Image 1 (cartoon, rainbow, N blue to C red):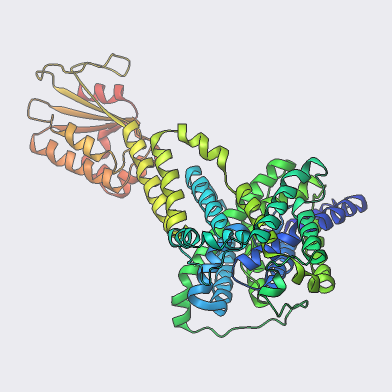
Image 2: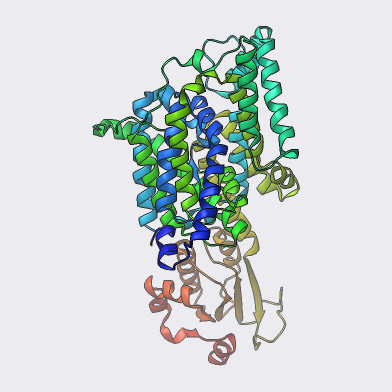
Length: 542
């Protein structure tokens, strides 16, 4: 497990031409990241420079140590609502500690080689919570976009919209017009130029208009009087056990979301460049990036899909572009941060409205309306829980529901076929509903024999009575067995013993055989009663 940058260096892939292209890509990505980092920092409930500090510190280490060639790290829209909630409940210091704890969790996940964790999260859940976060992020922007006079906006979704509706009569027309102008620029600019981000053009033009014509709207300067243009010294917080207990929930929330979003971003990037990332190394890098970000007063960070895509489109093909992006942002912060005070708040809200729209997987969301009902239910439930409650509740309930539905599907595909015959072989047609005068009863298990289908098996067991001499359990298509299935077999054996019916096993695969042997069933019926085929079992009976 090595950082992708080190692997590329060892393979001598970092040529002069390659490095030059990555430097150019890194500078362009920094320009894309600048307005986003400021806007995301403010929407998260911290001062503007905290968003830039996060992009600089976390962005550097996520690229330097990461397992992806092109991943760009920094603050993302997915964290806004979570960070805002943590600050509201635990304060800035609580957020910093929770972010560092999340970093440690991510490093542990990476070292434990849990990078494949994303494979076990159903796609409807991913689409559901991503779209839910997009709606939640969108809903946080209307106060600044409309210039509403609301002193304290509620954090919860429904009370927030109630507050908006109650204060619609306080809409500030100049603020709304500046916000609409910013939106129009961002929507139309890609038709003019796709290299320079529309968000930066909107920020420059609207800031210039507000300053030149002295339009009375809220700006960063009017909202935040003390904005630092320097990187603070790292501070280490002494943490008590009580504090750890209090913040372990938020820390896991940050870690889970960082892991999911960064690995999703890396997978998307792989598809764009035809590469393959190291998911475990990526988690370690995300962990280190979050710890360093917190040490310097930043907020949680993860892989940013939009910025990663911009990196790829502009020629970035190595972690050098991500490193250059962080260094460029640092230089911009040191030189131009005082000018940030002039940026209208409504412009930043407009930028995040576009971000939230692009975040939502709306095409996939619509397509899932035509998917099987179980997938649709998981999607809608995850979406609604994310919007109305929070991400953790949504993922927990969504995962539990998805697992139950998955087990039901598996149980529905597993069948217990009954055959009653006197002298039949595997090639013979199954004779069902035969006379009970026949002496041999055959159970054929098709599919995994686990707790989800035991009730079917117990119903079939009722057929066993004294009219049979032998029961052959054909496990040719039984791919696996669990402890509950094992218990059902023991109950089957007890019933057969009561009615003096001999139990034989045939076609037992490796996994079921190991379980049967380890849990004593083979010893119970006798090794001589286990056969490689149904024909051999029939010959034994004969």
